[in-house]
Length: 263
Figure (cartoon, rainbow, N blue to C red):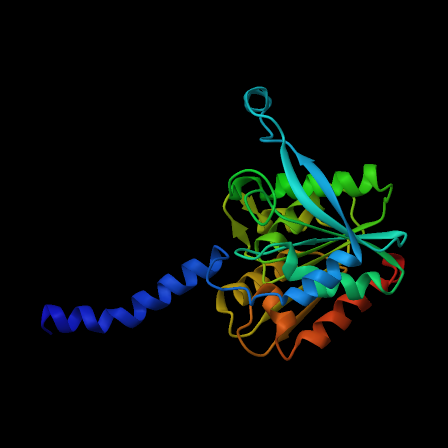
């Protein structure tokens, strides 16, 4: 085979490898634009808050840099807390439609926020501190809002962070949507055996890297756990914008409504 022909024959395989690698990093997808009227409605039904996150978890670095101000919104006034962690390259607005519906049940206080460098949050994008920012959101809900029963619901990198943080801190449950088993410095596969709270794993069958990660996370996790795979290739919160969206919304709501002791 001539070199040029050999190179052309390798292109499909190289493209597949590139797609899998990019998707595993949470960047192989785009977030459909959230309609301005949806954002305006969410803004009207929520209140803006500022979450303070440490620049770094290393004390020496904190001496040199001030804390990072994360932009957040609080929906509802329910006794149970739900933190919605966004995927890359989206921001918290991707969660606004679901946050509004969830708060309307009057059972939940819902917190959305932008990771550092995303949306209206300060700082540069730092994927080694996604879990740091989620812990800051958790601490805000627990100490500033006074809510102790907290669920973490995350999409893609936000789901990886939810598993990692859920294994460290007391949570009522974790919903993982299209989450990579590993993302930058976060290793959800290593953390998930320590996550004893109820877990719901969701992915799309043709979103190959996420579906593979879901299988790995499912196998490594303990009960109680649930898993559901949708048709198609929608990733993260894009599933909520697909035909499967209404079913996923109801599935998450049912998961949140089921008492931990009954699982």
